[in-house]
Length: 43
Picture 1 (cartoon, helix red, strand yellow):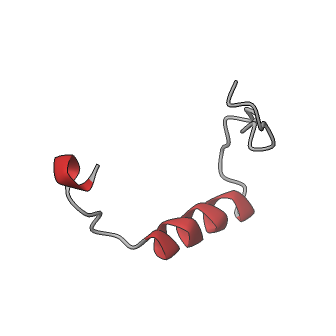
Picture 2 (cartoon, rainbow, N blue to C red):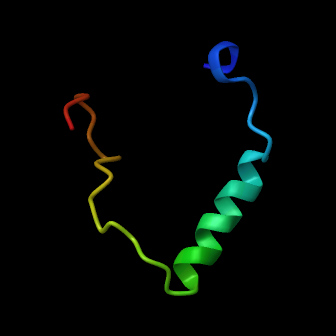
Picture 3 (tube, helix red, strand yellow):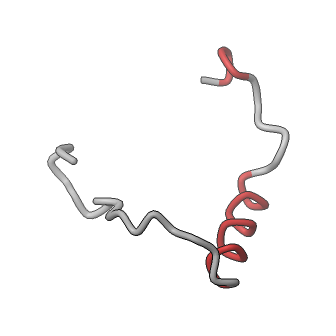
């Protein structure tokens, strides 16, 4: 993907912190399941 889009201008750690701060401050969430626990690849 980096060959197509290049490297992100914001490091991953900062993006994760932004998201956590947004949610902790009561920011909107889509409320959809992530299915991270699925092991068979079917979402």
